[in-house]
Image: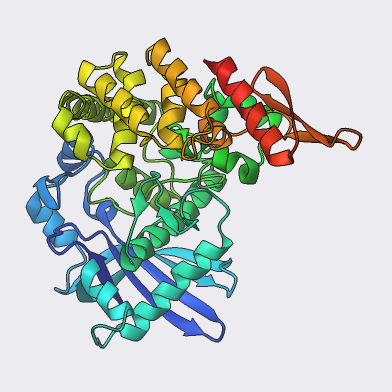
Length: 459
């Protein structure tokens, strides 16, 4: 019987996934065991219909408030250290460079030898706590590092010191990143198997080219993710559910089917059942029409959640923006978040406008704040006052810094010509539909003047 260990929050009751890793020369044998929910639940029986109605387990913070399945069923299938459990197991061989050299899915039985918390694992990996499984944990951390090295997406790996999971959420802590990375691998390979089989499933598909604001950038840069990453990473659309596989752009994967958490998410249960159909060479458990309906329900739920979060954010913003005392004590980042909401709400509270004018007068606005004021629906006289401040050569509000913050240069990069006869530099700058020329005695000053001309045009 294969051993596994679980890593989750200290209060988690639904332990879907167990992991294990062992070195084989310069390779690593990775085991990912996922609770065999589809094996235990009758197909479209009462329990699955309840799961379909609920769609997922609901948490409030770290506390579960409503389980997708009954608590008794959840406990019986969770990979607790309480005896054998049925699982759908992935065994994969990972190379030194993070490549998957071989993999195999199977139905089997495992036994969890330890239930560890994220905090405990982080302490073990940092050498602050000793544990009998520290070598296994180090091997798992090495697997995650190798996978990170081989991935090319914006999500699922560390970029500029920041790791984002398959929803684009920032994940901190080595243990948390380890589990997120391994889950992405499992879902990636399930997606690959289901795509090759041709069976309908609940794939996550993300195509930013469908977004009107982003599509022109794809055409301009030939879809190159390296070039596009800094341009669109802040505004990527949510992945959609589809019954046929398609590109998940942020992960740079041709197929992605979440299957690593069937105790918590109905889509994972569906994909696990379809994976078993492939393994057992049996027909699809679900007709495409039924899964299309599930896609619609998942999309409606996601849209409702976005609206709920938006309303919550607006209420919080209105409280902050209507309190002079609060506006005086917020950090630069928090103040920037308040400014960002102006375009969402479509109005600016008097207290916020007063605070902006005071900050402009004191010289405490940052280039990011200035860029937001110029690009959003703020009063024209406030924008003009800001342009005047920029023209006076304010050291903090450097015109070029503001322009760079306002958006990446679209079109050609700045071009310079030098006139030896009069010792003058000419800077030609293109931003969106504007093209300007500025002349000065130094290259830096010419570029600053060109940036100011562009900013005046924006105003």
